[in-house]
Image 1: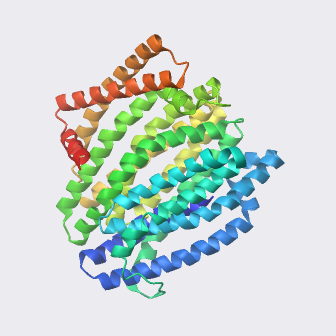
Image 2: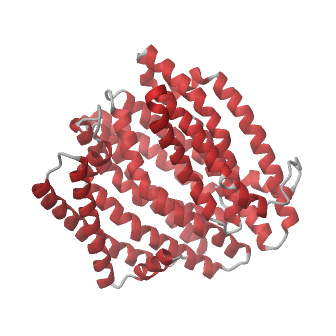
Image 3: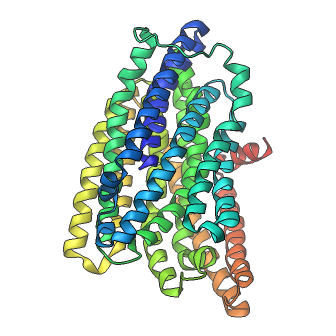
Length: 469
């Protein structure tokens, strides 16, 4: 539940409303109006999040059934979930503050500390598990979430103080820039609300499929989000200020070039990621999660879900680029309409698979998500192309086809390598599992790079430049 608030306020409001307007003022060298709008936006956000926290902690027992109806079957499980939810509501204050500072820093093309923040967020969670887990159990992990969220915010403060000298708590609710931010973020928040509803429906369906279903889906989903979070979000975050600047200056050809490059890079990275997760789904899950009570059967169930989820990596990654293209044009309504349609498709597919294809089990939920993600990608791409009379689609399609071809060769090479290493070294220990997966991934990357060079893909050169930087 705290994450829902973070995605709505930070994910929706910042990218759709705050950054396009703030960057437009910066592009026109109108710092005064940029900061008057930003100050009001941040002040209102902080007031809102404080009220939200109070309400969330007070009414947690009514919120929990909305996201996990299966928890009602056990009084002990329900009470534990309520307690954990109340504790972690504290963390959302710091994650929202971190999101607000990240939006401003990205507008000034400062990416290092905002990128380090989420790393420290995860470090906090790891420390909570490692240092407090044995003594306080799962409450130690909850404390780690709060600590990580605080680190996420604090690491960005020094850079914010450098560029944010004009910041002060201010409530100029009639400022034109602030009102424009609200107008733009409204549809985006509705769209993200629909997206969160989608996750709630998926989780509720999973909660009645059997014990461990939510956990298996969550682990598989987290792995699916790994390339999305590292690469797609990184590329989208980096090109977003440039897209905003190009539109503010009327540079539409440069906008198309930047968008095309972003989309091609996303395809170049996420297509092999998806194929790799399908080829090595069981070995990857076994390496990462098989320990303690997480047995071989759990490995197979989670890997099964991951195979179906993998296709969503490509769709969700492309959506990050397309959505920011619409936001740069200050069109937040189209992504909402497309998102609402694809969520409806996802829910209908979920119900269909559960009712008529029960043998798919949680695989049906993951497959529904993948299909709706690909549909979302196609509809957004077509809509943005119509809006701008073309988006260099030929370049994107050629690059995508080449990436698919190279990825298939890579997947075969990785699987053959893993089978060879498994046969010769076994999979009994974590070291052997690491050798198997690590060796297969290494060979896969080498093969993919070689095939990409043979196919003369420009993305290889750009990737090398990125690595050097």
